[in-house]
Amino acid sequence: MAGRVPKGRLARGSRLGRLAAGQAVRGLGTRLSMVGRTEEARQILAQRSALQAAQQVVTVLGGMKGAAMKLGQMLSVLDVDLVPESHRELFRVKLAELRDRAPEISFAAMRNVIEDDLGPLARVFADFDETPIAAASIGQVYRARLHDGRVVAVKVKYPGVDEAVAADMRNLAFFSRLWKSILPSAADGAVLDEIAQNLGNELDYPREARTQHRVALRYRDHPFITVPDSVEEYCTRNVLVSVFVEGKSFQEIRALPEVERDRIGELIYRFYVSSLFSDYEFCGDPHPGNILLAADGRLGFVDFGLYNRMDPAHVDFERMCLLAAGEYRAQDLYEAWVGRGIIDPHAGVTAQECLEYVWAAAGWHLLDEEITITPELATAALVFAVDPRAAEFRGMRHQSLPPEHVFSRRADLFTFAALGQLGTTNNWHRIAREWLYNEAPVTDIGRAHARWRSGRRV
Figure 1 (cartoon, rainbow, N blue to C red):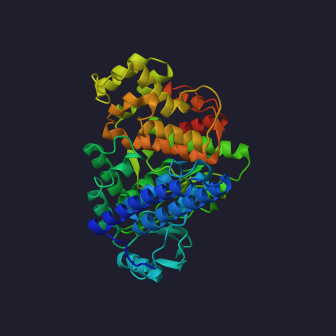
Figure 2 (figure 1 turned 90 degrees about the vertical axis):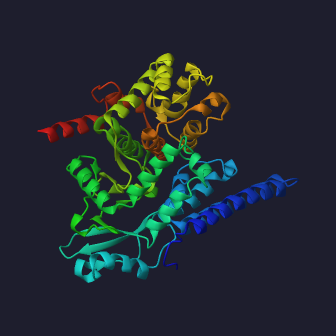
Figure 3 (figure 1 turned 180 degrees about the vertical axis):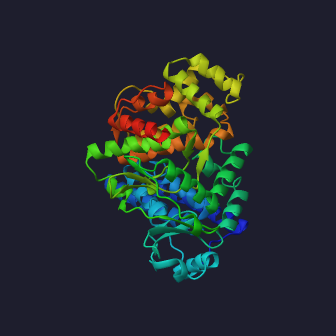
């Protein structure tokens, strides 16, 4: 197994180049090989192509870790149009290895990182399982037990990952087309700076430990949600120790009965979306690997490297735009966007286009009826949001999303994608009215959450 992450700018850039070239050649080769084949043969070739493409992405991005691997993690929750429609599920499952079973660095190398920061393992841990329970873009996670008996999750950075991410940031211009498929206006310099800053925050384990502690205190004694506290005395530059949450993985949650998945879907919505508008902060990394169903029945959320606070004025702007769209006030929406510099008044974009664009990307908050979120529905919303070359929104290619809104919009879209993987149903607008109009909650979960919040203020 490898002991370090490739970290040079040229080495990492050339890997990305080879990946892009390989995908292009494979796509052309598959199309040519399908000419004149029977339908059965086309299906076999499509499947083979999908799996080969996914395997190459897993191997290249997984081996690089860092920011490049984060792209693959994002792609794993979408039905992206990279492979034939009939085999996108296979492609997504394979890419999910980047989220759940990423290529591992040897424990010997990871142990050196831990002991460099904390001293000998036996001094801190009574037990330490050398097999990682998760391997992600920045580090691996292990299960251990402290001498006081607490079972903990130990997140450890890959050796050299700080330098690798720095190299990725320098290469952002090189693979901006990949970023552009994930985030709006990603080729813009201010937006790239915002991305770099947020990914830099993921490397700041002491900051993440403080954030996690604060959020754990906020959700302490919540009836439905749990956030494991960090063990700050053992959190260092390269090691983050937090209380371990026993529970079902997201994949196991997907197999639960519909009524339970609907309950969990509402909790996911409240944690990742409602929190922005009620508390002016949000988690910018809502993906299935960070969600689990704890043994006590509460829904657990982990990973706070991309947890952000947002200026209330910016949050209120987003709320105002959604209200204008939901109330079909197209001209108000248009004027707000022009005033904020999101669209150029001379670009030929109409007020109606703005209205339809918001409904395509965020209509699930606005439609007052039950919606079952599917992967296809979630992906369509993201494609409309980040790829306005679609005929319906051709003029919206002129939009310029302010950098301060990049990660809140990303959180919204990827929450939608995670819910799509769950296949959950709700009247999301009725939940959204709590933060859109400051109305009282109408769901049992909402009322219980409101009682809990009220009690916390006492």
